[in-house]
Image 1 (cartoon, rainbow, N blue to C red):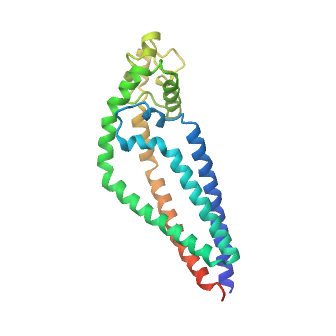
Image 2 (image 1 turned 180 degrees about the horizontal axis):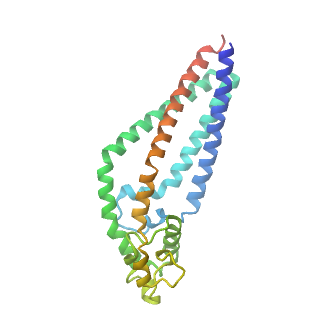
Image 3 (image 1 turned 135 degrees about the vertical axis):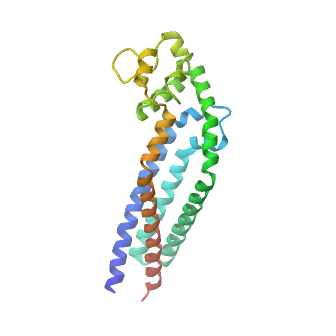
Length: 242
């Protein structure tokens, strides 16, 4: 009896955290959907972008869906544990099981298609550079997206400062974006070359590589929590009425 009470309390706390996390992710998803001032906005201006990469622009909708599912899952887990409702506990178990299976399948897909993704990113290189040379300094929306991306990632262009050579901005001002020069002086070609600020693609790849261990640990931790949640929900389900 004491063990069952402890499991109920832990189930309530665990799912309360899931509910809060779902609410946060839902809020972030709505924000990303409303304000796309990020590297994803660049993809929308590329007509020949690979379909797989173009779908990244829909990440806001994905976050909304994930947040909503987590919020519902947390609500069912909390209420099911407190009220000892079999229907809620079983529904919670099924949702967690589906999510766990989807995560395993997603991990397998990422491992299998990783070489194809790298190839697609390389093909995207020239498309982004052409877009920068055509629209940076002329299209206000695209210029804002690029400036915000370079500011957040501390990078310059897709590859480096030469991506802006011949762009409307460089042609009109003979200067390069301030992000291409870490110094406070005027960002002319000589200064941009001397600073050697890396491109945004390399910065993004480096960011992911630097945090690969952390991301892997978080993924393993989440999988362990999901398994524990399924076990606890089934124990409570079996003990209802006893």
